[in-house]
Image (cartoon, rainbow, N blue to C red; front, side, top):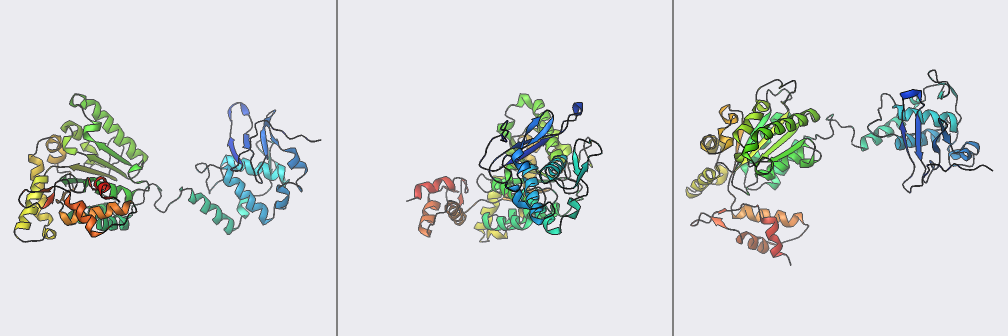
Length: 443
């Protein structure tokens, strides 16, 4: 009685899985490692015996009674359908190419076609011990099956219209998120959108895009950086094309600035080499050592490349509180004069913000980034008023899937501290603590 080979076999409930390894050294034949499971691929293959791949003998001798026996002859549509399924299971996405089937998939295909279904085969010209089909069966696949295979491959996230699935560049989504989720920041909404959109739409930009975001804590600088990452990259801030540096955390010791320089340059270079469009976020940039910023200044300058690497498709965001007091004074002056805050324009703030940054203390102001005029836009974030805090509270409740009413939103907003002391106009913390504060107002 025929006895099934059980060496190296394991049953797994999630179906069969076949991986392939080619050993070129010593002229050893390819090895096909198969792990049986439930379904039509169960116990199809066993580990090599005496240098040859084993096949379940019951399958070979009793095809009509096996699961494979029901698939029909090699020329039947059912055969082709299950063959595609087998190759889909056996091929890892990174090895599978549509222009030419990988070695792994080709070997699995040839072996099953010639040895299991006993199709029309001939000895391989390079190795007569192996059989290959006498004709190119892949070329005869219908458009329907090719389309199915292509859809499967793309479902793995390996093909995209942009050419790199990590990069989405969803400008429509960016515009919507800035409009719907960012409150009280009409200047930031406009400048950030136009700057990002113009950069994305101009592949021949002569330098990386560099934005400097300024304002009080809690006004939305980090929030905007996250919105940018979420809409430009599939995985948002977790994308391998995005890197966040927090000055006090990543570069805490001034005495180690030379070490930090090398580490920072290497990190930026490695990311640019790995990803064609990168996003670098520097939080609390005013606390960066001037030498540290100068070390990466060439990457933001008008160079075709630096040491053979082009950085022109990189985006640099610098976030700081510099100029926050000046921005608040301008907003307060508009309020005192009876003007709407929406009437504040970039002409009222950008030049003053640049001068304020140059005159400030700290590495950011003293760096060649400022003296070299390499920052493309200074983006002001206005202080948030009572009505904006209510909108933030509404969003915080909605993010948890909770319904609320105006009375509760008023309670949350009233619990915040407002300045100046006389006018009590602006939230001292912006919206920063709102997600935590709503816990006190839950039933």
